[in-house]
Length: 347
Image 1 (cartoon, rainbow, N blue to C red):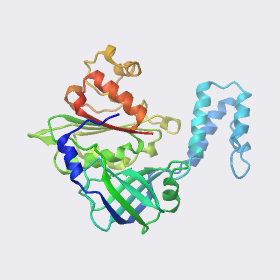
Image 2 (cartoon, rainbow, N blue to C red):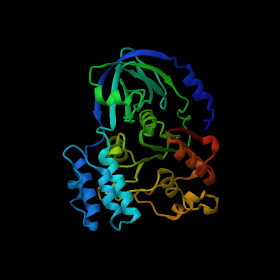
Image 3 (tube, rainbow, N blue to C red):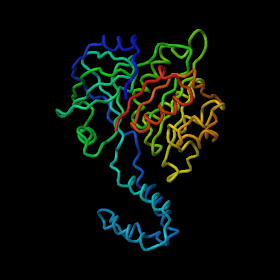
Image 4 (cartoon, rainbow, N blue to C red):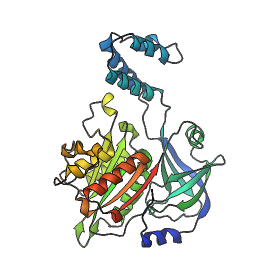
């Protein structure tokens, strides 16, 4: 998946010299929550209609849950595939290591200049790994939102050992997905999980530098962010505060699993589908890929009045490659100009 060239932006990025700097960790804290009790209660709630409200306690041997035994009990009763999937999703969350989302800040000994949207390589315990920068270049420190990857090259060390005061090595910057020059176009950012990091940098910089207003006219700035659970949203409080402060910033989180734990009443579809719901009404459903035709007629779950005019949007997408690929196909189908898109996929 190639990112189109914006010569002025590429030249800007290329002019930034690669640097290797020592840096000191100033913050290392969880962004997600330990929701063990809530998840256990939700599993019991799923089992209660099966006369299995006590099963969770009965399959716990004092050290861990015997999930094979739970599977056998489910096999012996009449349980719908949907309920079984919900139980499996909750079990996966219960077994998830905590924390699984880490906010890290470092202060380099010498300034590292970067363009919003770029990434650096962070090295800890002699292991390097590329991470997007989550703060504007106007900040004094470098910020990261890091997802734990079981068996990952670096994340295990970061989550288990990283502490304030530790020394790390930063190498960079790299990356070509940077902001377009200011125009009258509205800006639409779509991300899954920690794919929001480069967009936080870009959005913060846009407001700090007044790039959200061109020729006296405000541009609408959108962020669609897809996650499984509410506490999976990286920098969620920051984005919500920004939406309260800026009338032209619209934050639309979509959570595919949260309703299993809470009374979440926001968006629940995949982020690329939710994007379609916020377009202006005059869409030809026949032009949409099959995965989007059904949601095109659905009403948004938020009270945001603004809508996106595809032909007047510049679109940025970052996240799981499958999401980015289907999103780009849909965006082209609804009229977003191809030369107004930038995107990066991973995983």
